[in-house]
Image 1 (cartoon, rainbow, N blue to C red):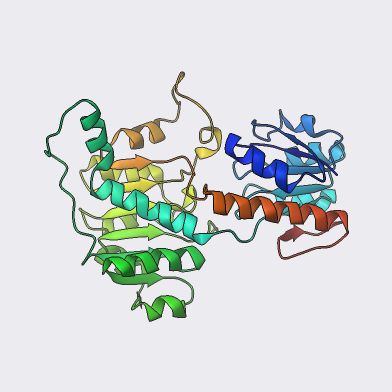
Image 2 (image 1 turned 90 degrees about the vertical axis):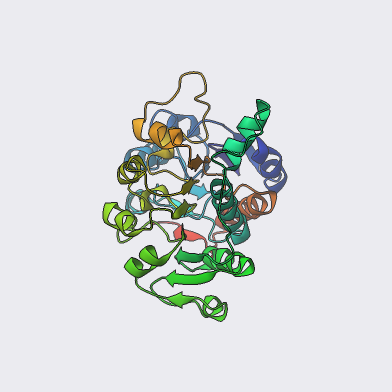
Length: 331
């Protein structure tokens, strides 16, 4: 089948080529928007990335150009209007599983880096400044670690936390027995936030979890707590977070996602800068570390994502659905 893939990172290209070699594949580094959707005319399959905008307008343009399948290369699909896709007769598939270790390990990378002031330390040493002033961190051992969302990724994060020798608190709609076996105590969100020295977010972005960390939630956290978000940007009220940091609260913040990341992340803005004042302000705080939605970006995880995408295309070509199908053929 002829496939047009949007938002392809350079490291993805050889993996996509290998997985989809039996198809006719064209790859673009631009994102899918109303302006770029006409490029898909004549392609029955479009493969999208997590920061592509597949609203009703874009989906209508794809359908008008002959697209039949949207194969998203991510687990999240809040960027796709599934109702519009069904009305247009478009099939939509995603990747329901990839290595949870990739995200959990990156979340801990962020936590450790902000705790031990690694970025400031490295920047100093590059200028041959080897003072320790302002670089004091804390032992992770003995901390109380709160995990909001204890699914596959949250469980992996908790296992690493247990290895450090921490007290584990969890919050979710239902307890995970594997986490309970690690000694995790499930408590209410408010108690978790107020007791934790480190809070990590691993819940999906739903209406019920949008801004789950809002102004009131941040006010409950300890002044010297660490906050990490490697899940979805919309979980954190970024404006409230800036206000909290300006008030001199929170010892560290690690963000791999941002609620308005779609027009910024995965692009090079080094020459022109960014117009998003909130993101620019967050990056300016010395105790904040922002990475560009790269938690999933390991060879293992990306390989699994691409293999699942290839299977989604093959199954569609054979008229089959699988566990990744969000909107079946014919809507």
